[in-house]
Length: 202
Ligand SMILES: [Fe+2]
Ligand SMILES: [Fe+2]
Image (tube, rainbow, N blue to C red; front, side, top):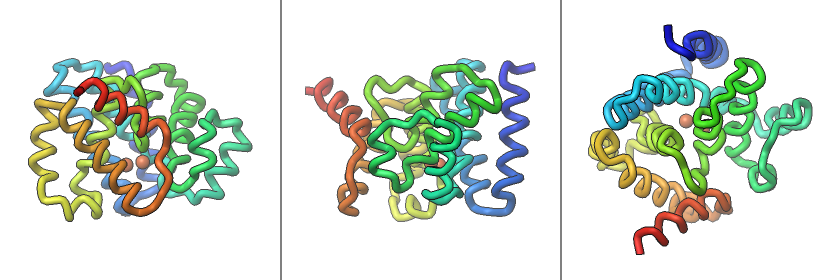
């Protein structure tokens, strides 16, 4: 029996209930499985692998909700959300709402899981190993259509199993560059994560 068996069972059912047959259900399952694989091969920890699977199953549970639905949920349930995510909006709110869901409905109190889910769209300062695992697994998921145009994704996917730090840096860079290329605002958490990497490298 794993520590998170009931949470995993709940999240698997909830994913099917909400998104059965849709690409999002496939993405969620794929990310959860790859996150678990990275944790297992890189860290060789069954517990971290289980946490990675939980975080992967939870991360996009609210991705299919509209901005208005998410804002209404934030207000109605007093969901803890940073000011920047609220102000920037866009696709950012689904992450804090998912973290809130597993904390309140599934009683998950594990800070590593909650953090990985909350920050999976932006990255953040002092990211943990689990934060980085989910961040990379999400981006590298072969079922994400936008990634199909990046020919080195299969190579990065293999590299993530042995050199997570380097792949995290690449993924963070690409996400920030993509956001800038679209003329969208950068979330300060992502900027802080990037600056931290650069300052360490120089
Ligand atoms: Fe997401
Ligand atoms: Fe995702």
